[in-house]
Image (cartoon, rainbow, N blue to C red; front, top):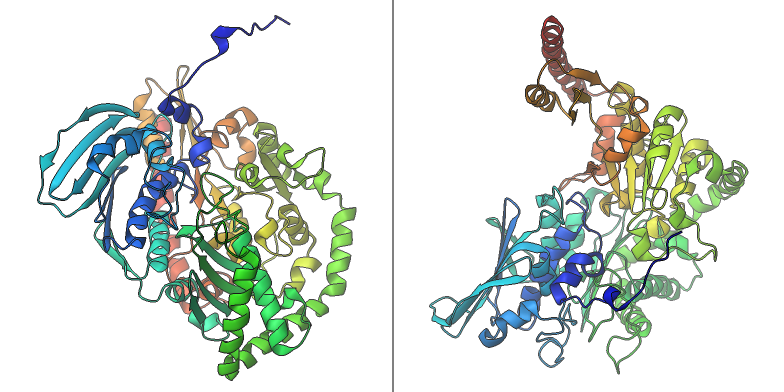
Length: 630
């Protein structure tokens, strides 16, 4: 092996923008193309929007305007405006900002002066303009490099800041902002800042009742067991109810930041609910019976918060302020007083809550024996050798739990059949990608109880592979990808898996972990070029681009795609369709329509779509005949 020289020439000093562009993951987490809610392009938007929110929280400006047009983001707030003399420094010099002084931004989201600089460095174009006391200044950047800066000019505009940026296509390849993800992000801002008006591409988002509005939007009123309990205190707000679904569903926030991975405040909240309810009823209920089917939200304001990563998705602060009470005592004391008082004043809700806990207790005891046998079977089946090809990130010699940052990179593909799972297994990145192989079609579990999951070997082994038996808190993979053939059987398997997750683990879908793998239908090639096409129109375009008579392959199943080809489809060029529940979607109605007994509405839907499929088939036949004739 040749000796690698290590000299003074190997020592480099990077300026701020070079370091961010070289190691973007340190600043914004994973990159992605916009198909996942935690992809980098949404973090860029959040970093800029957080500054506008901080202005609102300090009492300046009542509206924030956001437009996204062809990948270009423009945000205008009506706060105080960045001080004009330091405007360029504020967006281009590390460790420069106005939030180090806790008097000015006592409970701010961002305190380290990095966010806007990262947006600047990772954008092919970045513009900042501040309006302050009838004066304005504008500066423009390219890849973090200052292009031009104007002199101070007079202005009649209302005070505030305008930032426009275009994420760099060389870093965020083939990215696209999904409006549903952006809107969900903005609604969270609206709920946490009651009274703030957000104008997103002409649509107004506004909340009057904070977390109460959030839970009303996230739940189906027909499937909650009692009216939402809404409690507000100094620096804390909570909303709680119980539904009919399995699992737990929490939404947690710190200083307006959606902490999707929870943290000390959420742990304290879950403990406080159990502790308060036990003491109120004077019964030592099992915590699982209290927490199952809970739907709740918590928002706290913390002075100088400590997050476990730059993306601020998990709170690490043990105290609500440097010299303040512990997070645990702060949350527990608040709930112990306020939730207890609420239940004493609302006997009907207290009775409904107790009835739900007792029902959960009966169901848990009913399946206890079956669950024990199912766990023994799963262990005996040696899941990690026969069903699951795990990724190496989950094999650590010390046996320690995978880190939250590491988990963000992990993906599991759920496949059907040996050929499909074999191709993906050979092509995958063994560090971060795992494969679970189904045997045949899974059970249609619509309308069944959790007992069926333990009685059915395939479903039981699947929940063990994901480690979601006791809820998604321990979910081992950030992305759960259904990878089935693009034929009738594949679509049916996909639908059955969707039913399984929506029936028993709806929070896995709601939290944005479930995806569908999009694989090509056609390969069109000649001796020089190869095109992979995902639709009939793409196939026709590819044919036009090639000279001479091309070779056209129609992939009928994943097993027909070689491992070498699969490297593109599950690597950097992976195409995933996130499973998103539309606004106001009722899971029970959705499953009943597609998986329940035939209804006139569904029969009409099938007949209409069957006609469309037959029309398409006839068109494809004509195209095939034409190709053969040529």
